[in-house]
Length: 336
Image (cartoon, helix red, strand yellow):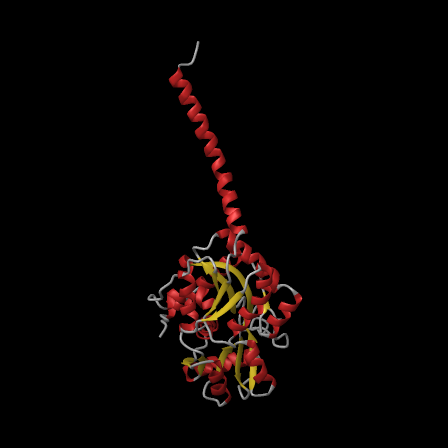
């Protein structure tokens, strides 16, 4: 029995179609790989949402030079301060040149939209996590004259004082504010929130006795504690921090269990950036921050080095959004 010409032609066409379909993924992967190999084609811009000399700025500039060497292109740090870093975050979210990333703080990547629904970007939908760079717990501090000789004594006095005590933060919606509300929910204390323009003003108010406690970056607080102007109550980590190992954690002090609250900074990209490029950046940044030289610089700036995959950072974003977002919703906190 012979095959008709029309059936033979159809069979040949089907075979060619199947072969083309089988080859398509390999071709697409090759094209994708070739495109990634050609990247970067021009200087990489790193946006920072705070002015020069700020912590995120110092972090960005610390990794810029080694990242430039690794990429073979200039890495330009571009400061776009304002709105607690959200101006820069919005610019990153909307960038479409595949050569713009940013160094952001945790608020920009987690709770920005929860604090203010009018925020022009969605951290989850519009930002691609690249790598967690550095983390730091906060240090609960009080005036040097604060009552008690340990954390339990201090919290007993705070509970007795109720809303007659007050705490300071560098503004509504900051980690210092939301973190203290979280601590209040875990411990039963009830100090009133007093916002200030920044942490230096919070410290001055505490030294002068205007407020009774505050959660502060350990580097800022430790200098005043060592000078005898403030008292350390405890660190917001489950164990002692390598940044300030001389101070016990609140868990160790017996006032909380499993309480961990950290500030952090991370590299982020637009969601539109190709996944292969994001993965390459993550691998490079992780390797850079883990070198002894960069690790030491970041430690001196007050950071415990992390260095993660995009998936690792995404998991951290999800966990912190749930932790802080719950307090935002339960306490009705809105950005001013």
